[in-house]
Image (cartoon, rainbow, N blue to C red):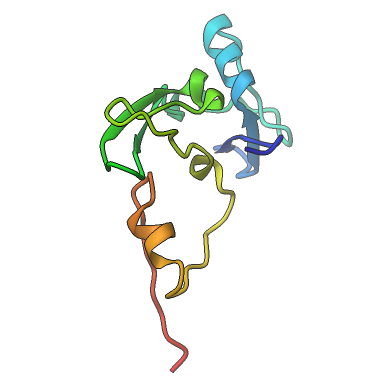
Amino acid sequence: MGQDEGQIIQCSGCGAKNRIPLDRIVSIRSTGEIARCGKCHEPLAIDSIPEAYALRCTNCRAKNRVPADRIKDGGKCGKCGEPLQTDALFLPQPVTVTDADLEDKVLRSPLPVLLYAWASW
């Protein structure tokens, strides 16, 4: 995972997208402070961020629940013990999929996938 990991929250006031680092989200939840938009300073809806993530193991396909404050640690599958792929949670943009990597990026994805297919013809 990169140094810019975190959740993107869109401001309901001005529409600006704000990236909140995971450690900051944990701090906000524990202290009760208010996160504000970097552009218009309106309060952000931190409550919309899940407290835990459901990930599917890419090895055995078992569902695993990983608390949001432990997502940096990675985690292991409760059934087979393989490491969970938590980096897929924070992809900032859509991912291009080809015939060659369809199985890895879609069929073995730890997250639900919305696939939009089109053809140039």
